[in-house]
Length: 581
Image (tube, rainbow, N blue to C red; front, side, top):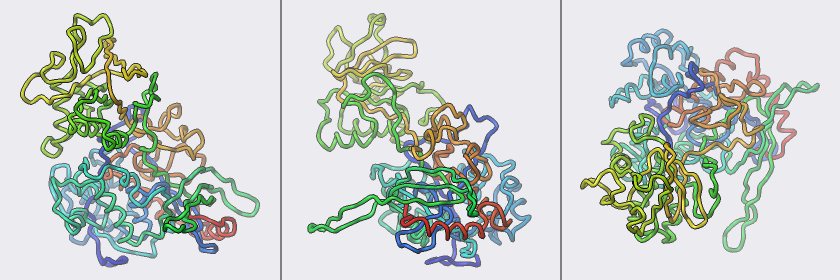
């Protein structure tokens, strides 16, 4: 490698990315057959920093999680090249990479390089970048990446990354002691191996997996180590993104971004400070949406869902546990959902010996169920939950099948028993059974009642009433796109439905990540918004966007070209007083 970046001399890319514990494996969306990519672009928002008169930045992005961090790394001049000693196990890709070794990966024809590649993402550039960072990783192999990273500051593109909290995004809000779903090296970003960083901190990596707290700290440290802090405006909330037409003064069409930034104000006598929300407004040629999809918990939309004992986040369960509200004498906790967050809730309640009812819509053998996709040796805790789901299923008593059946912990001969491995309501009474757990596969919630009774209905129409102490509805989440018209609904593959990572992601061009249905050019999206749950594959979106920016710059002219950006920066600096978003 020829160049060196701040605080580092050379970088060898080794895999980034995995997804959150709540996510599942990326999959094709039924409504997007034939669309194996998504076009999303990172945002180039002009903004003024806190100091008046400072020159505004050109690109900007919403959300400072791993998506925004990786994109900032690529836009800051860190550039991937084919190493002089490169070798890739895929002979076709190896041959293509050798055709123009003098060009950086950002300058190459990504569509050409993607041809013939297969992987666990529906995004072709994500598969390409993952294959280059972690060759044959899915087979448990540890090949050296054929890429080398050079720091070339002349390639840097001014940009700003906006986020509500510190760099790392939602990882800072996750429970700190559980292990991530993905392997540690799948979680890392280019240029800093996560395992090495963790060993320097305190310990060897357990089972090649890390905790969310370690991941959050790693991402925050990464931004500092790579000298990216000047590109991050934390404590900001975007309230509006609209298309701004050109005017007679020569201002070209662009995007206007408005919002609020939290500022620490006067320091009080006890050492605390009073924060204030300062409005900002800025213009940009390009905007990148990277907000993730875990802002708004999904709801069932059934009667009684707003009752106080019905919760929609894992953290509400933790709060109840810390207050001592749940123990082995409690009525059962009802967990609704069959994802990894639901499994975490089952494990947390089970650890307290609190009885658990577990209702979900899928069959336990459904190949789409995340538990059927995880290796047992790597994920023993989730395999345990899956065993419980299979072995201890509720069976309706045929004698009461014509009426709604009541389930209550204090059983009587006329009412079915509580969750117990020795109960006749379960399908298994083997020694591998887990006391206090009962699953309801292929059941849905019909209603919640004020007396803490819940009505469940099987897919064949039989109803069962269960008495509970608390309900946890953990069926996923939706992104908060309130800053877009109609919450960005028109940007989805199906514009009639709300944006959803799994069911209706934002539709983008597969090789540039530009949003197909945006109000104008220059809007990009990446990460979970386009269906990429795993950090491992988020980097592909960053590569696609950075490559598109690089080609626009080298081509000259058009939106995003340096001359226009510099003019617009001056324009913004005279219009906006505060541009820290």
